Length: 85
Image (cartoon, rainbow, N blue to C red; front, side, top):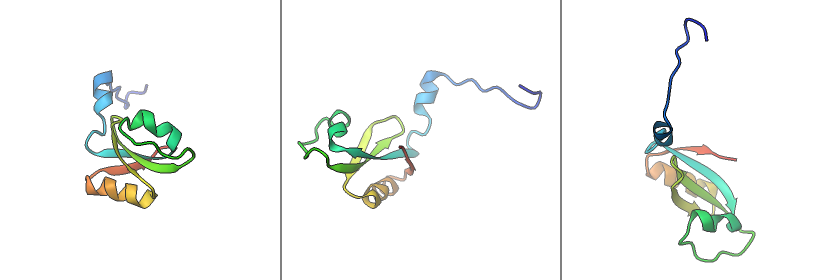
């Protein structure tokens, strides 16, 4: 570290809250992965791909059949969407 750099220490608890209420993660997922993320989800045909929107802390927000609908859901909740691959 140089004399112009500053070290920033972040606790795990602080890290867990970064982006909370501001950022949402957008990810296209196969139906087989969705049950663990959305426990109350009814049975969906295997191989179906849906767009999932998650809060910064990983909490599921919504599912959509189109990317544009998931993005609209983020915007309606005043969240900045970022893609997760």
